[in-house]
Amino acid sequence: MTDTTNTRVAVLVGSLRADSLNRKIAEILRDEAPEGVEVDIIDGLDLLPFYNEDIDSGAVPAPATALRARVAAADRVLAVTPEYNGTMPAVLNNAIDWLSRPYGAGAIVGKPFGVVGATPTPYGGKWAHADTARSAGIAGAVVIEDVTVSQPAIEVDPTTDPEVRAKLLGALTTLVEYRPEASAA
Ligand SMILES: Cc1cc2nc3c(=O)[nH]c(=O)nc-3n(C[C@H](O)[C@H](O)[C@H](O)COP(=O)(O)O)c2cc1C
Image 1 (tube, helix red, strand yellow):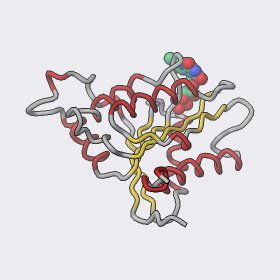
Image 2 (cartoon, rainbow, N blue to C red; image 1 turned 45 degrees about the vertical axis):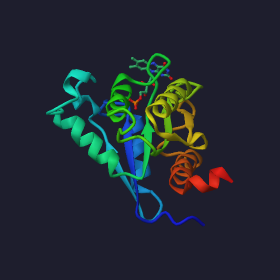
Image 3 (cartoon, rainbow, N blue to C red; image 1 turned 120 degrees about the vertical axis):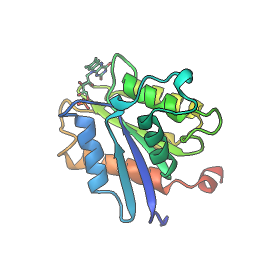
Image 4 (cartoon, rainbow, N blue to C red; image 1 turned 180 degrees about the horizontal axis):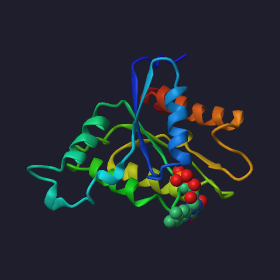
């Protein structure tokens, strides 16, 4: 069994809604994470200004510096997000943009990355999740496709259904247990 102690996972929450289902999922993952895994939920992504190269030099806005520091300190990055109009919410896209720069040396570069989420449709947000994975990969993250869970929340409540909770926790476990050498074998 892979030793996952002292693994820190930065979680980017794609919803700003007070009663967000996806934030609740992030909180379940934090509260039930495997032993030794610390989940750092980064919500409030609306505090970030829209990415603009003009403000990404010199005195970089404090929320962007803080986001970069938290992700840089993490061993893994997980996005937990709904879908808006067939893609990821703008706040998540914007966060990935901030994490992608400086070019080639952004905080997300080289970080194993996964995405999960739920929406009240039969598709569970799968286009948002595919776009998030593609964007994070282009930004330099190491996307672990096996992590992806696009959970429909129409007939089940993902926060209480034992099978769904187990699936989401399994996704987190897959992300933290990922080892580059294992994938190369
Ligand atoms: C602007 C907007 C666009 C949406 N577009 C989609 C969509 O394309 N696909 C989908 O599955 N759900 C869509 N939804 C529904 C959201 O998935 C749903 O509101 C979800 O519960 C939001 O996640 P949250 O509970 O974490 O805030 C949309 C909701 C909003 C507000």
